[in-house]
Image (cartoon, rainbow, N blue to C red; front, side, top):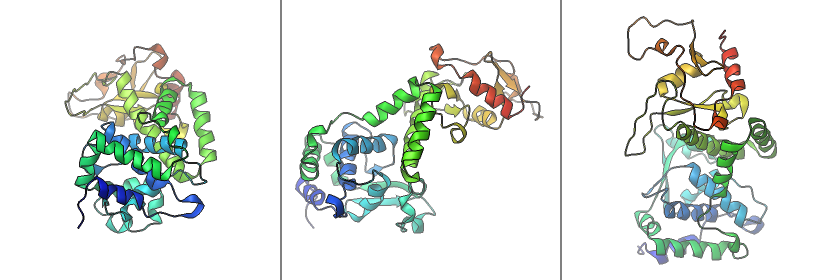
Length: 324
């Protein structure tokens, strides 16, 4: 068995199994370039490659810069089909082992993220990707091999796809953001739109707790943890499925129990940003966690008034659940 060194992986990357129609499918090379960048940026440090918005974003950024052939930009395809390469093994979630063997099922991003726990790469490859010089050699090798005409467009540190979406979520008015999403929905198929929603949803989940200082805006709960663990959720005021709206003003930061209470209409927020409690439930036991204790509590608001929860969205929520 050959030593799994830099030369070995250059050989493997040069001989990827892929469709050679239409100039050769660029999906696997783009995924490998994105994976190398993700290691260089500290997204990954181990052999387990989970599907993260950072990796999907790098994939789409690199595709836009490097690919000129008429192929469809789908992250799902190479993440699944890379399993035909000896350095990439898919690890399914419990109960999904047979499902993962169905190639047709794994074309869907939703199915992929449901069925796959992570992909495991060789330890030797992981070690190379953690070394700056070796990872750069592999990166340049792939660029030269598969994208000699467009490699000049490559930017090693950029993830424009992610940064553009962050700006849209943080800065765009609701109407413009929603119109953008509706237009994207018209232009791409369902698989590509699932990938788009995955990235946007995860950025929303990251940005909302940040602007509320990782604090529940109702209870004041905040837990600082050394392992980047947060007990605060990003809660859509109007669900994304109804609004196509991931902007900051359609979100509030809540601890998990109050997130559920808000989503189920047990609580809402009035036009002066006070909590109102529905009358349609009872709490028969005394508890420090009772929901009704928050009646008329003024919620914590972001420092920037432009990021306050939308009063229109809050009105929609109150009307939906019959608050007077």
